[in-house]
Length: 353
Image (cartoon, rainbow, N blue to C red; front, side, top):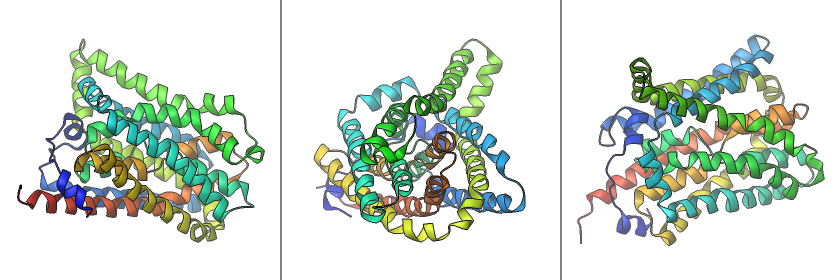
């Protein structure tokens, strides 16, 4: 554990987003094993998708993937309180560190790793860039909560991250990969925007209607109380659909897994330590540092895959790159969650000076 983490450790109280997402306070012992259980559920979903793709014609799985992902985002947005948004965005130091990590460091590192490992393969560089330059908007909240990070900060930054990555990814691809990318920016933006707008509109409409209609209020209350399970279920369904759709190309290119392992590990290690350095420079507490680490490490293969399916339908190597990534990312995030929780416990036991 870095010495500064113990010195600046500050055990923040449970926040409303954390309790709504996961159904219990941060002080519950249940949360210790959630990161591992959720990662296992996601990996089992990936294996189930591969098996389904091998057993039946999985072309129709594409039509299930986007609705499942949109449903998951509704369950994320439904529990975000205005006061949590204000509190999160008022933390300028965290927001600045998060934006620098995700929209300056990540794309630069992705471009460098692409040139280092795949200098003559444009599709692999595009796939790696679209994977690593797009911060996660879903499952990283599970790991953040399990490690007792500041979930309100992480959840409140989601809308900004979604908008920025959809707007910036075509610029990244064209600037850092070049003309070999060969895609239409307006088409990409048009196809990607509904992934943010529709779930946000549904969540906002439900919250507004809940104040006027008792039955809607009961439904929204149930959704908020069960959001963690609903979010995990819809995410696992999206993962099943993602792997079922990509199963044929994935199984035909298993060697790609070995090729991607080194650049992905370099990215995750760099993101972890860069986040610690940035958190120290910004004067963030331990729990805020944990939130920064997960938002900097976790990537967004589901959303990236949704974009690739619509923008690069005839370039399977890009899709394979994104489909393989969760098999590496989820175990790493699970391990980091346990590590941060252990470090946090050690820090809390240190006597005050």
